[in-house]
Length: 312
Image (tube, rainbow, N blue to C red; front, top):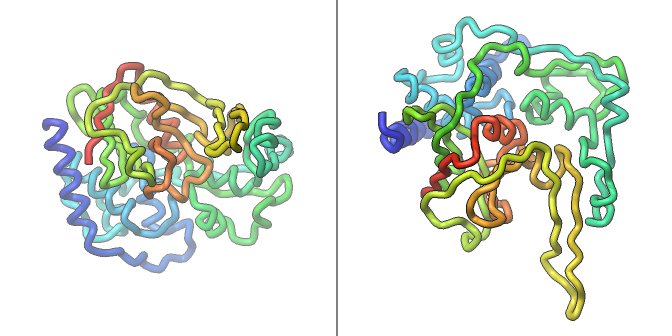
């Protein structure tokens, strides 16, 4: 199917799903939730609900509806049925990890001032909770629910922590993207392969200031940078003062996260963020923000010259 036609089909499916929020059927434990299992299964295949939380909201609806549209399935009427019908044999949903001293040694305190941030060796995680939530593509609330009784935010070394398994779990590797479509009105980026098939969907944030949004049209990928640093430029300078730029080191708490996809519009790109739970809004300074794990996945799908179409 043609790229535009498929994008419209996915959007239509999303609208069909948009009429309601489904309540999860009570289960013995949060870890056994079929809604949680469905979010993990969709994420593995590149159809992201952004942060996994076991709750059924708009971004989960869109991820499911788009996956169904691409694969020619009718959209099941509830997440519980969707899990049973679409992914009945999904295995290795969760894995257990052990908090280590090395992880504690890697924690940092992020200073409030630009000078302090520039002085760091890396902009790493501030807590074990933040580290494990990102590793499992989870909200911090969902991490707590998966691990009741754990002494968050910094459980002692040796603590066992359960998170979604994106290491040993099933799900195909991400194919190469030939075209990316940034749909501003839906706060999403979709990726298409060379045959025009929609192969991935990622919720994103866009510029809060409409004047900073790029015009509709086509851009290209110019750079692909893992673990980028960030050049901080103050927005205001005192009269007669000198602009003092600061270089913030790489890390998950860097303002552009753990991946940078540069575009032909100068200074503009697709990148990660240290605040994944805020994705899906008009709040960025101009670029397109993704959760760090989605920015990494999308970067690996792209090449220099990949087409990026911006549309309303």
